[in-house]
Length: 331
Image: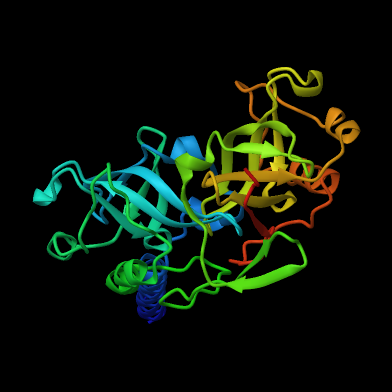
């Protein structure tokens, strides 16, 4: 009798253990399934505030579709000069899908930054199918770029890509883009007028742009731009003073907010104005062109912002920035 009781107890114990094991496996399976279906967290999403690239690095980057197939190469960027915002990427499809050698503008927030862990190279993803891509708004020749400030042109691009645009975390974007009011000063300086014109320039045109002081004395030129990928904002311009004030051939990072922009109507030349005295300019910290600082390091950027007297930046997509001063030189 005792043997029967023990045998029954053992049998019940075995059944209980099996039940608990299956239950635990089901819970783990449910957890794993939930984890697999959850949102994928990429390196970019976790470090969106510090995803920085130089303008010269962005030009030439590859663009792939969601399946990893190469679609295009970034030929250039279109930047709204005053706030320093990248509005469009200009893509070359290189004959892909019969699109020929024309160039196509794509809203910046339709592109998502990615990193290929296999060969450690960054690229951009454009989540669009080939059939839709073939119907992209008309491209343009490299020798004849459109007026990117024209609402007639931009509205077609923005409308076509609206459902493919993915505003980045922390940004507020109204679609389609509205025109931004720009304060324009026309000499005499007390004659202020408002304009809805956006100062849209190719990123490559800003490279090499002259930098002057308030007295219109040449200081140097823009050697490169440091762009925060999300939201596509110029954080710093790397300036080359070309030996001015004995500063040698080093580069100097200046916050974009420290600049005003000037447009000479007579020569159609754009330039940046840096309001800083020469004594302070001499004391600025520069860096070797082959050894760039880590602009994702907040200790570095906070010192730069403080030195040039500008507030720390944020990831919010803003239309504030330096004024655009238009002038006509007397000939």
